[in-house]
Image 1: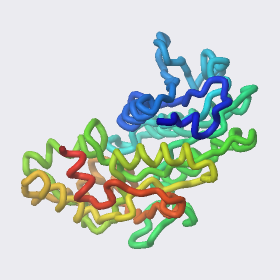
Image 2 (image 1 turned 60 degrees about the horizontal axis):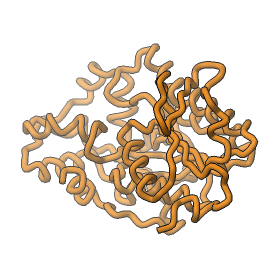
Image 3 (image 1 turned 180 degrees about the horizontal axis):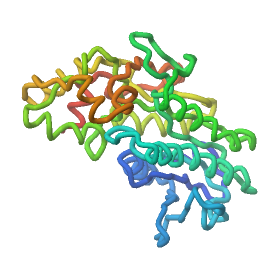
Image 4 (image 1 turned 90 degrees about the vertical axis):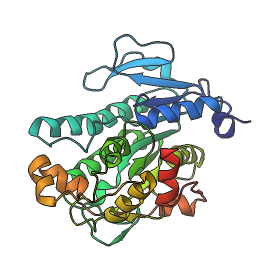
Length: 313
């Protein structure tokens, strides 16, 4: 089996893929997938005691990465770091954390990579379909304009922060994720205890569209973007079959063989979570992965039934 770096650039002096956010749900599975392909992984960690295969970094500090020379000749970088958007009230302090963990860290990493003598050819940066704002039933693809609201503004700044890498000739892909459905500590993991007790239900009216992707397809899409050298710019990492929140709720309840008769009223969500409820839980984004499909990507779990079955197996 060829490694990723054998497919792309056999002459790289390092050949590793740099990964930030490697301890999160996405990062953990991505790291395993790369390792299984024989590709070395260099993890960027915020710990002062970096272990083998890890490099300490502090994007808020002037130096950023403790040992940038170790990244010379790397094949690519995949930046997945970011504070959780859902589940937190967006206080002034938490808004600053959301911006710093996404925008500031991306700018720091892009600038550092651009300054290397032998920079990676590719930088993949996580983004989100939240960039489109609340768009009702409108079909959205990568050519759609950005929307309005705090989350959309954060996503625009997040993507713009990679400009130093683009200016240095590095191919940049913005992976605009929908809700990633997989076993682990993500969105689905937070919902399961409530639904397993039979206390789940739709959010608000349930008519808002939910763009989602299975964890397996999310990882495959990242690897596909890594290997598809003609791909650049925004790419929606979402299933081609978005569903309404009501449909998602119905299918999840069926998979768990539990009722879902306790809707969360919109006003209650707003009281509990403020603006986060409107922009992250009640907003409607009906996004399609046009760029991935045009490039030939094939989804393993294109329907919500398949994705939930895989996640709950």
